[in-house]
Amino acid sequence: MEIQFSGAAREVTGSCHIVRAAGKTILLDCGLFQGRRKESQEKNLRLPLPVEEIDVIVLSHAHIDHAGRLPFLVREGYRGAIWCTAATRDLAAIMLADSAHIQEKDAEFLSRRQREAVPPLYDGEDAKRAVDCMIGVPYDRQVEILPGISVTFRDAGHILGSASVMLEAREDGSTTRLAFSGDIGRSGLAIIRDPRPLERADVVIMESTYGNREHEPVTGARDELARVVRETAGRGGKLLIPAFAVGRTQEIVYDLHELMLDGQVPRIPIFIDSPLATDATAVFEAHPEVFDRTEDLVRTTNKLFHFDAVKYTREVEESKKLNTMRGPMIIVAASGMAESGRIVHHLRNGADDPRNTILVVGFMAEHTLGRRIVERRPTIRLFGEEIPLRARVEILNGYSAHADRTGLLHWLDAVKSTSPSLERVFLVHGEPEAQDALAADIEQRGLTATCPLPGTHAAL
Ligand SMILES: [Zn+2]
Ligand SMILES: [Zn+2]
Figure 1 (cartoon, rainbow, N blue to C red):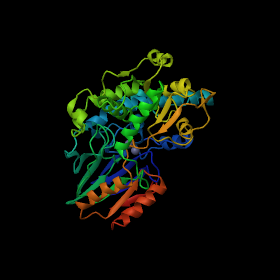
Figure 2: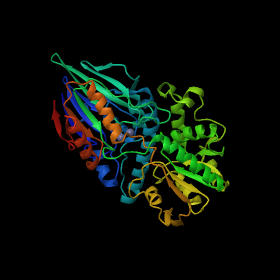
Figure 3: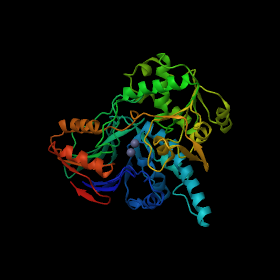
Figure 4: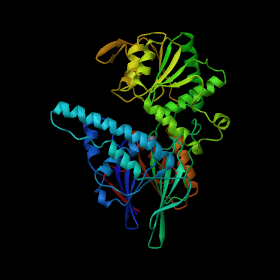
């Protein structure tokens, strides 16, 4: 077996690893590179390898940094299978359609600026065809995907349908078991189950996003959310929450549902103002088989995301009406970093009102509007206008969907405890500082930890 690290090597995005075994070539993930526009555009246009060399693709989960280049591979001629869980397939259908839309818009913008036709990386048709290649399988069932090659998906507890993958290759009478962590989630996250480790691995490829950080506990985040809702409602204000449409929005709705049932917050109207979030919620509702049955709300109701206080707004006109409505109310809208989407309109309308609160529940990257809000700048620029930031700004760090340092080591320790032949761990999906810190922790456990550079190979 040989592994070639193609993406998410010494960085977080562009997850893509090429495995060659039993005379076959298997691609683990093929995600978009995100970050500085020009640099990531160049990387996204470079194929990890000629498509005719790919025999099969295995996808860990639907996030764009893992699935986002699959339509590009299809556009370039890939027609093979893409194996994933059933929930990942359904989430990928809406996320790749959305990504295609963004690619098309970007290409339009560039064409106008450069005065020449710039084709998009892919379009809606390519996204659809990529989803047509996807075969959804249940967790914990070994499936033979090629002669001599099998996979097992194990719940990674990160987003709906997310998986760690055990890839087993039989060649020349011996078997090699490669454990690919995918993105590892956290214990105690709402709706989805806790991460479950793989076993009997000969080699591990694992993520390291928060390899040098500890998160605040999940339960603390819910209490903080309750406090912020109560205070904002008390002022008669609007609570504006920029949130990713898939995952974070459903968690917030779930927590608000629970808090309202418990009487911990007043029953003020909640508007989920995002067509993508509305679609994503429907996908969640279609996959109760992957919900966490140990959670009270999951056990006691089958309407997790629909209750009297919550309303999903799809049409632009409905969204605009929210501007003229008076608080108290909660508005959850994309995009997560407040760079685009309907949240920008709500911020323009509400950022200057001291009764309102802007609640940050996700990571805000540098150079985004979200980051400027986190920094509590005196004014923020919206649609070319400087708006005074008088609304309160509250930041909740407990909603991360990624394991922290302790969580990552916990996962690896569990894998190690069943894997007598495990010696080597390859760290991917992390910034260098996080990776180096985690590598040092892993070496202390008597394993060899490597942080491969993009393009490097490892023979096993
Ligand atoms: Zn992810
Ligand atoms: Zn990721």
